[in-house]
Image 1 (cartoon, rainbow, N blue to C red):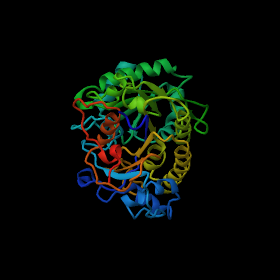
Image 2 (image 1 turned 90 degrees about the vertical axis):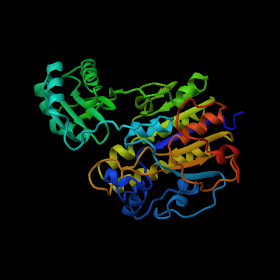
Image 3 (image 1 turned 60 degrees about the horizontal axis):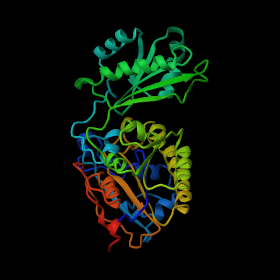
Length: 399
């Protein structure tokens, strides 16, 4: 019999809490997103995460302090998969182990053979071909793209190929077709990418270019059945807020809610609290990563955490007695670290319910899959071949 009627998993994209033991293999030794952000900002004003026990997980997070938190459990999770990207982290939460990491081309750009084939099959020249911020590369090449009809192709620290084009120069439907061509090319092992993303924009010059809401992701489907599939197949809700649906290529997704920012994502998640459903609401808040981690802006990152924390307080105040909240992350992105890549870090897991009574820090688990496994156990469902075990302390609320 289920203990919790509704489970909310909120992913603070990239909010890591210290380098994993194998971080040196990823050139990430010493990374700690939360600690370094807090120090750069001379402290974090995050009273709601503090109340959930965040300081128990790392007392060096400046601005936090130790508290009793009987309504919340806190722990760290190590990533079992081989990687540190968005898809790998989210898939693992839902029980998928990724042994072979997706391809990334952050340092080199895409191979010339790939670019040549994409030019041949689209009939258009390509400019860019580097790792870049989407807004910056449009500023750099947008006017050129409008004059020539060339495609702006770029990547990031994720396993992704993005194609940007002005909507009045290349219709959105045509841009989508080009992305479908890229998706087919990048299914090959030598180019295997997690996502192809269409990035249409509008405006008249580099001073006012703006990306539109017509973004479209062409992702790989998970390599196996996920805990979301099990929930959905058994008629439980799987409400996905933000880019969750894109990350899973729609697989296991019962409902998709688009967002334009962290603030918008939390507002829409708070609205979901007003709905009567049984199952999972799975939320991704991407701006920690996209706007501040990759751009190596620790103070902006800190302010983003503080804004989220304020909305988190509103969310908690509106929760029902039989709701369960899990706040976590999918990888790190330490803005003090070298480069602009994700960082191989443990992630925090803060678990709250008004009905919990014995909350405390509990031992670190060695898979993000503990999240999904605990959720399906709550609904009396059994795993198939997914990774992860049950966090018994939470479902039994035991000493």
